[in-house]
Image 1 (spheres, rainbow, N blue to C red):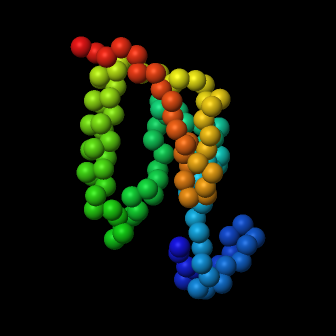
Image 2: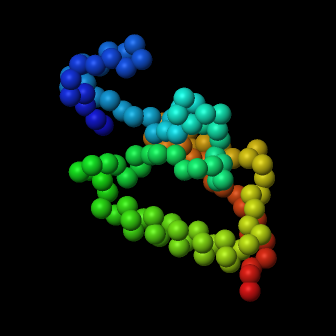
Image 3: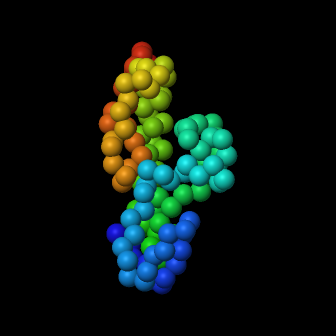
Length: 117
């Protein structure tokens, strides 16, 4: 939870100093004014949007560089080992997590295809 440090109004809703505020992470990256028509869909070829996933300023996550490196190495290794990796369906069977605290699916079925090598 975060707390308003002063009285303010957001989109017609008044928040008083000290009131709890919960950010809806599931809405991150979906602002059409910021991201245009692609705001509602994932496009791996699109330029990366700005984000706050690791915080900012004095609250920036010390582990961010390691987390990014781990993801880069893991994904590169996966795609190198399974060059034909593909989604198992077009999304028909995917169910959302069902929480305002995340924007993800319960599972992501894939077909590994042949192993390189």
